[in-house]
Image (cartoon, rainbow, N blue to C red; front, side, top):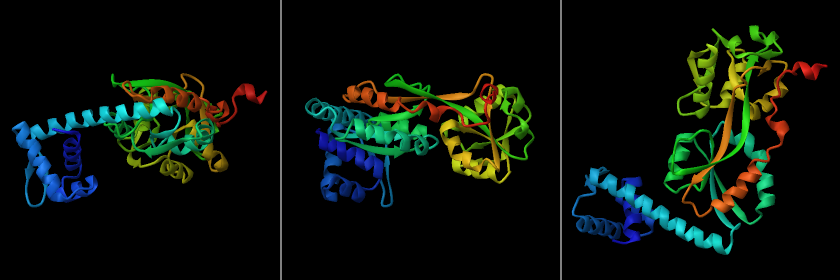
Length: 310
Protein backbone atom coordinates (compact mmCIF):
# COMPACT_ATOMS: atom_id res chain seq x y z
CA UNK A 1 0.00 0.00 0.00
CA UNK A 2 1.30 3.46 -0.90
CA UNK A 3 0.10 7.06 -0.88
CA UNK A 4 -0.72 7.08 -4.58
CA UNK A 5 -3.12 4.18 -4.11
CA UNK A 6 -4.81 6.11 -1.30
CA UNK A 7 -5.11 9.14 -3.60
CA UNK A 8 -6.75 6.94 -6.24
CA UNK A 9 -9.10 5.55 -3.59
CA UNK A 10 -10.22 8.99 -2.42
CA UNK A 11 -10.62 10.29 -5.98
CA UNK A 12 -12.83 7.35 -6.94
CA UNK A 13 -14.86 7.76 -3.76
CA UNK A 14 -15.43 11.45 -4.55
CA UNK A 15 -16.18 11.12 -8.26
CA UNK A 16 -17.83 7.63 -8.34
CA UNK A 17 -16.59 7.13 -11.87
CA UNK A 18 -13.37 5.37 -12.94
CA UNK A 19 -12.74 7.54 -15.98
CA UNK A 20 -13.25 10.85 -14.17
CA UNK A 21 -11.17 9.65 -11.22
CA UNK A 22 -8.36 8.61 -13.56
CA UNK A 23 -8.46 12.01 -15.28
CA UNK A 24 -8.34 13.77 -11.92
CA UNK A 25 -5.28 11.71 -10.94
CA UNK A 26 -3.61 12.18 -14.38
CA UNK A 27 -3.37 8.44 -15.06
CA UNK A 28 -5.07 6.09 -17.47
CA UNK A 29 -8.28 4.37 -16.47
CA UNK A 30 -6.69 0.88 -16.59
CA UNK A 31 -3.90 2.08 -14.29
CA UNK A 32 -6.34 3.40 -11.72
CA UNK A 33 -8.55 0.29 -11.94
CA UNK A 34 -5.52 -1.97 -11.48
CA UNK A 35 -4.30 -0.06 -8.43
CA UNK A 36 -7.75 -0.07 -6.82
CA UNK A 37 -8.04 -3.83 -7.39
CA UNK A 38 -4.54 -4.29 -5.96
CA UNK A 39 -5.56 -2.35 -2.85
CA UNK A 40 -8.68 -4.49 -2.44
CA UNK A 41 -6.61 -7.67 -2.78
CA UNK A 42 -4.17 -6.41 -0.17
CA UNK A 43 -6.96 -5.56 2.29
CA UNK A 44 -8.92 -8.71 1.49
CA UNK A 45 -12.26 -6.88 1.06
CA UNK A 46 -14.20 -5.20 -1.74
CA UNK A 47 -14.11 -1.43 -1.39
CA UNK A 48 -16.51 -0.62 -4.22
CA UNK A 49 -19.67 -2.04 -5.76
CA UNK A 50 -19.22 -1.81 -9.52
CA UNK A 51 -22.00 -1.62 -12.09
CA UNK A 52 -22.07 -0.33 -15.68
CA UNK A 53 -23.67 2.95 -14.61
CA UNK A 54 -22.35 3.73 -11.15
CA UNK A 55 -19.76 2.98 -8.51
CA UNK A 56 -20.72 2.78 -4.83
CA UNK A 57 -18.66 2.38 -1.67
CA UNK A 58 -19.10 -0.75 0.41
CA UNK A 59 -19.10 -0.39 4.23
CA UNK A 60 -15.44 -1.46 4.19
CA UNK A 61 -14.81 1.11 1.48
CA UNK A 62 -16.39 3.91 3.53
CA UNK A 63 -14.11 3.08 6.44
CA UNK A 64 -11.04 2.84 4.21
CA UNK A 65 -11.78 6.17 2.52
CA UNK A 66 -12.18 7.93 5.88
CA UNK A 67 -8.83 6.57 7.03
CA UNK A 68 -7.19 7.43 3.70
CA UNK A 69 -8.40 11.04 3.95
CA UNK A 70 -6.84 11.36 7.40
CA UNK A 71 -3.54 9.90 6.21
CA UNK A 72 -3.40 12.17 3.16
CA UNK A 73 -4.29 15.21 5.30
CA UNK A 74 -1.45 14.39 7.70
CA UNK A 75 0.96 13.97 4.79
CA UNK A 76 -0.09 17.29 3.34
CA UNK A 77 0.39 18.81 6.78
CA UNK A 78 3.93 17.42 6.87
CA UNK A 79 4.71 18.99 3.51
CA UNK A 80 3.13 22.28 4.55
CA UNK A 81 5.13 22.31 7.78
CA UNK A 82 8.34 21.95 5.81
CA UNK A 83 7.32 24.79 3.49
CA UNK A 84 6.38 27.02 6.42
CA UNK A 85 9.65 26.43 8.21
CA UNK A 86 11.55 27.69 5.20
CA UNK A 87 9.12 30.54 4.26
CA UNK A 88 6.64 31.10 7.11
CA UNK A 89 4.59 33.85 5.44
CA UNK A 90 4.76 32.71 1.83
CA UNK A 91 2.84 30.06 -0.02
CA UNK A 92 -0.87 29.34 -0.09
CA UNK A 93 -3.51 29.54 2.64
CA UNK A 94 -7.04 28.27 1.98
CA UNK A 95 -9.60 30.25 3.96
CA UNK A 96 -13.35 29.63 4.17
CA UNK A 97 -16.07 32.09 5.19
CA UNK A 98 -19.85 31.74 5.42
CA UNK A 99 -22.08 33.72 3.02
CA UNK A 100 -23.88 35.98 5.54
CA UNK A 101 -20.49 37.42 6.56
CA UNK A 102 -18.06 37.08 3.65
CA UNK A 103 -19.43 39.75 1.24
CA UNK A 104 -19.50 42.35 4.02
CA UNK A 105 -16.30 41.52 5.91
CA UNK A 106 -13.80 40.56 3.21
CA UNK A 107 -13.77 43.90 1.32
CA UNK A 108 -12.88 45.58 4.62
CA UNK A 109 -10.13 43.23 5.79
CA UNK A 110 -8.48 41.91 2.60
CA UNK A 111 -6.43 45.08 1.94
CA UNK A 112 -5.02 44.76 5.48
CA UNK A 113 -4.26 41.06 4.93
CA UNK A 114 -2.42 41.80 1.69
CA UNK A 115 -0.43 44.58 3.34
CA UNK A 116 0.57 42.33 6.25
CA UNK A 117 1.31 39.23 4.13
CA UNK A 118 2.41 40.47 0.68
CA UNK A 119 3.76 37.04 -0.36
CA UNK A 120 0.80 35.01 0.89
CA UNK A 121 -1.64 33.69 -1.70
CA UNK A 122 -5.00 33.54 0.08
CA UNK A 123 -7.54 31.27 -1.62
CA UNK A 124 -11.07 32.12 -0.45
CA UNK A 125 -14.05 29.76 -0.35
CA UNK A 126 -17.60 30.84 0.51
CA UNK A 127 -19.86 28.04 1.76
CA UNK A 128 -22.44 27.38 4.45
CA UNK A 129 -20.95 26.64 7.86
CA UNK A 130 -21.51 22.87 7.86
CA UNK A 131 -19.78 22.57 4.48
CA UNK A 132 -16.86 24.70 5.69
CA UNK A 133 -16.46 22.45 8.73
CA UNK A 134 -16.44 19.34 6.54
CA UNK A 135 -13.84 20.84 4.21
CA UNK A 136 -11.74 21.97 7.17
CA UNK A 137 -11.72 18.50 8.73
CA UNK A 138 -10.94 16.90 5.37
CA UNK A 139 -7.89 19.13 4.94
CA UNK A 140 -9.41 20.98 1.98
CA UNK A 141 -9.29 24.26 3.94
CA UNK A 142 -6.56 25.55 6.23
CA UNK A 143 -8.88 27.77 8.28
CA UNK A 144 -12.44 29.03 8.32
CA UNK A 145 -14.20 32.10 9.69
CA UNK A 146 -17.26 30.79 11.52
CA UNK A 147 -19.84 31.85 14.07
CA UNK A 148 -19.08 30.59 17.56
CA UNK A 149 -19.43 28.21 19.23
CA UNK A 150 -18.36 25.21 17.15
CA UNK A 151 -18.40 21.93 19.04
CA UNK A 152 -15.44 20.15 17.49
CA UNK A 153 -12.64 19.08 19.85
CA UNK A 154 -10.21 18.79 16.92
CA UNK A 155 -10.40 22.49 16.09
CA UNK A 156 -8.73 25.51 17.65
CA UNK A 157 -10.76 28.73 17.83
CA UNK A 158 -9.32 32.22 17.92
CA UNK A 159 -12.10 34.74 18.74
CA UNK A 160 -12.21 37.72 16.38
CA UNK A 161 -15.10 40.08 17.16
CA UNK A 162 -18.74 40.38 18.17
CA UNK A 163 -21.26 41.46 15.54
CA UNK A 164 -24.56 42.94 16.79
CA UNK A 165 -27.92 42.30 15.13
CA UNK A 166 -30.44 44.96 14.13
CA UNK A 167 -34.07 44.66 13.15
CA UNK A 168 -34.88 45.85 9.64
CA UNK A 169 -38.50 46.95 9.18
CA UNK A 170 -40.37 48.74 6.37
CA UNK A 171 -41.13 52.40 7.04
CA UNK A 172 -44.87 51.73 7.39
CA UNK A 173 -44.45 48.91 9.94
CA UNK A 174 -45.81 49.52 13.48
CA UNK A 175 -42.31 49.13 14.94
CA UNK A 176 -40.86 51.78 12.62
CA UNK A 177 -41.95 54.59 14.93
CA UNK A 178 -39.55 53.44 17.65
CA UNK A 179 -36.00 54.77 17.99
CA UNK A 180 -34.82 51.60 19.70
CA UNK A 181 -36.12 48.18 20.51
CA UNK A 182 -36.36 45.70 23.34
CA UNK A 183 -36.52 41.98 22.73
CA UNK A 184 -39.99 41.82 24.23
CA UNK A 185 -41.21 44.24 21.54
CA UNK A 186 -40.84 41.42 19.00
CA UNK A 187 -43.44 39.30 20.81
CA UNK A 188 -46.19 38.16 18.44
CA UNK A 189 -44.34 39.50 15.39
CA UNK A 190 -43.29 37.28 12.47
CA UNK A 191 -39.70 37.39 11.22
CA UNK A 192 -38.51 36.47 7.73
CA UNK A 193 -35.57 34.08 8.03
CA UNK A 194 -33.02 32.34 5.84
CA UNK A 195 -33.45 28.77 4.65
CA UNK A 196 -32.07 25.72 6.48
CA UNK A 197 -28.28 25.40 6.54
CA UNK A 198 -27.43 29.04 7.29
CA UNK A 199 -25.98 29.60 10.75
CA UNK A 200 -27.72 32.99 10.81
CA UNK A 201 -31.04 31.16 10.71
CA UNK A 202 -30.16 29.29 13.92
CA UNK A 203 -29.09 32.54 15.58
CA UNK A 204 -32.31 34.27 14.51
CA UNK A 205 -34.38 31.37 15.86
CA UNK A 206 -32.66 31.81 19.23
CA UNK A 207 -33.76 35.47 19.20
CA UNK A 208 -37.30 34.35 18.36
CA UNK A 209 -37.28 31.97 21.30
CA UNK A 210 -36.04 34.67 23.70
CA UNK A 211 -38.42 37.37 22.47
CA UNK A 212 -41.58 35.42 21.73
CA UNK A 213 -41.38 36.25 18.02
CA UNK A 214 -42.29 33.70 15.37
CA UNK A 215 -40.86 32.68 12.02
CA UNK A 216 -42.95 33.73 9.05
CA UNK A 217 -44.07 30.42 7.57
CA UNK A 218 -44.73 31.63 4.03
CA UNK A 219 -41.16 32.45 2.99
CA UNK A 220 -37.54 31.41 3.56
CA UNK A 221 -34.79 33.35 1.82
CA UNK A 222 -31.65 31.98 0.20
CA UNK A 223 -29.52 35.06 0.99
CA UNK A 224 -29.35 38.26 3.03
CA UNK A 225 -29.78 40.20 -0.21
CA UNK A 226 -33.15 38.51 -0.75
CA UNK A 227 -34.20 39.37 2.80
CA UNK A 228 -33.17 42.99 2.23
CA UNK A 229 -35.22 43.23 -0.93
CA UNK A 230 -38.25 41.72 0.83
CA UNK A 231 -38.02 44.36 3.56
CA UNK A 232 -37.58 47.12 0.96
CA UNK A 233 -40.73 45.83 -0.75
CA UNK A 234 -42.60 46.16 2.54
CA UNK A 235 -43.26 42.43 2.85
CA UNK A 236 -41.93 41.81 6.36
CA UNK A 237 -39.22 42.32 8.97
CA UNK A 238 -35.94 40.50 9.58
CA UNK A 239 -32.80 40.41 11.71
CA UNK A 240 -29.74 41.86 9.99
CA UNK A 241 -26.08 41.58 11.13
CA UNK A 242 -24.39 44.94 11.62
CA UNK A 243 -21.89 44.59 8.75
CA UNK A 244 -24.65 43.69 6.28
CA UNK A 245 -26.96 46.37 7.69
CA UNK A 246 -24.51 49.10 6.70
CA UNK A 247 -25.43 48.42 3.09
CA UNK A 248 -29.06 49.24 3.89
CA UNK A 249 -28.41 52.79 5.13
CA UNK A 250 -28.84 54.35 1.64
CA UNK A 251 -32.43 53.03 1.66
CA UNK A 252 -33.38 54.96 4.82
CA UNK A 253 -36.41 56.44 3.06
CA UNK A 254 -37.88 52.94 2.62
CA UNK A 255 -36.81 51.05 5.74
CA UNK A 256 -35.91 51.51 9.37
CA UNK A 257 -32.96 49.87 11.21
CA UNK A 258 -33.62 49.41 14.92
CA UNK A 259 -30.99 48.80 17.58
CA UNK A 260 -31.71 46.54 20.53
CA UNK A 261 -31.26 48.25 23.90
CA UNK A 262 -31.58 45.23 26.22
CA UNK A 263 -29.72 41.91 25.98
CA UNK A 264 -28.51 43.05 22.59
CA UNK A 265 -28.55 39.98 20.30
CA UNK A 266 -25.30 39.39 18.46
CA UNK A 267 -23.05 36.69 17.08
CA UNK A 268 -19.47 35.90 18.03
CA UNK A 269 -17.12 35.40 15.07
CA UNK A 270 -13.95 33.30 15.28
CA UNK A 271 -11.17 31.89 13.13
CA UNK A 272 -10.98 28.09 13.30
CA UNK A 273 -8.25 25.67 12.26
CA UNK A 274 -7.20 22.11 13.02
CA UNK A 275 -5.22 21.77 16.25
CA UNK A 276 -2.69 19.65 14.35
CA UNK A 277 -2.16 22.27 11.64
CA UNK A 278 1.44 23.25 10.94
CA UNK A 279 0.13 26.66 9.89
CA UNK A 280 -0.95 27.63 13.41
CA UNK A 281 1.73 30.37 13.86
CA UNK A 282 0.72 32.02 10.60
CA UNK A 283 -3.00 31.66 11.36
CA UNK A 284 -2.52 33.34 14.73
CA UNK A 285 -1.03 36.32 12.91
CA UNK A 286 -3.89 36.24 10.38
CA UNK A 287 -6.39 36.26 13.26
CA UNK A 288 -4.74 39.43 14.59
CA UNK A 289 -5.29 41.15 11.26
CA UNK A 290 -8.90 39.95 11.00
CA UNK A 291 -9.50 41.08 14.57
CA UNK A 292 -8.63 44.62 13.49
CA UNK A 293 -12.02 45.33 11.93
CA UNK A 294 -12.62 49.08 12.46
CA UNK A 295 -14.98 49.50 15.46
CA UNK A 296 -17.24 51.83 13.53
CA UNK A 297 -18.09 48.99 11.12
CA UNK A 298 -19.46 46.94 14.01
CA UNK A 299 -21.36 49.86 15.53
CA UNK A 300 -24.95 49.27 14.45
CA UNK A 301 -26.01 51.93 11.93
CA UNK A 302 -29.58 52.18 13.27
CA UNK A 303 -31.50 55.08 14.70
CA UNK A 304 -29.39 57.12 17.16
CA UNK A 305 -29.33 56.14 20.81
CA UNK A 306 -30.80 58.68 23.27
CA UNK A 307 -27.27 59.76 24.32
CA UNK A 308 -26.43 60.50 20.70
CA UNK A 309 -29.43 62.84 20.39
CA UNK A 310 -28.27 65.10 23.24
